[in-house]
Length: 295
Ligand SMILES: [Zn+2]
Image (cartoon, rainbow, N blue to C red):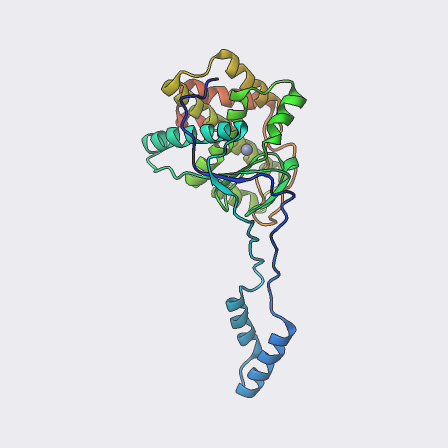
């Protein structure tokens, strides 16, 4: 794969080197006992139900909604190191391609996601991102989270890797962002929260993941049209990656933690099939994994 022609995205939030996700505080909502006593005294004096005052005060204080902890800002823009530049180029190409094909194929404008590069751990609006989590997309803050150690991990554990395989991983996460823009992720989450059994929830998850694989293929098709920069070997490497890697986990919005589940990403054969479908057709229509009887 050649990357020289690809434009570097500015939408990188580089938090590498910040270490273990420290440096930010998680606050506790709720009111101090002193406030409650004072509100009690006021309500006694005014003859108002104290619950009304306490609720009002909690709304002002942010209540118990457990506000999202804010990580320190990373370096924004384009990184200078080799891996950082590579990621910025792939992200830039996803921006250029999707801003063309999403309006053309789905009648919707594309909005660029941010990509957070981190090492160790960092905060996300879907819970703590950790190296062990693998790359993931968080719909709550519209960010892709990526620890580039994952690429080394792919190389070491699966004896492969290769630039296009790494690009496919990023494109898959961007595929989830496209699903988010199309309202697919919120429907999926509603389905999974709807008290269905675990098997149904898994089946829904598998179709969602396979669609992201297919979208990654569609992106690669268009990139190759624009730059003629991938060949059969690259595609074989990406297919090998699709076969081998464990996928990210859809973040559970309700719990805000990652729930590892090895049965929610589709079989190797399914992943290869949907990646190559997108790659061959370049058409989002071909990626309707929910329409297929067996995806
Ligand atoms: Zn995924």
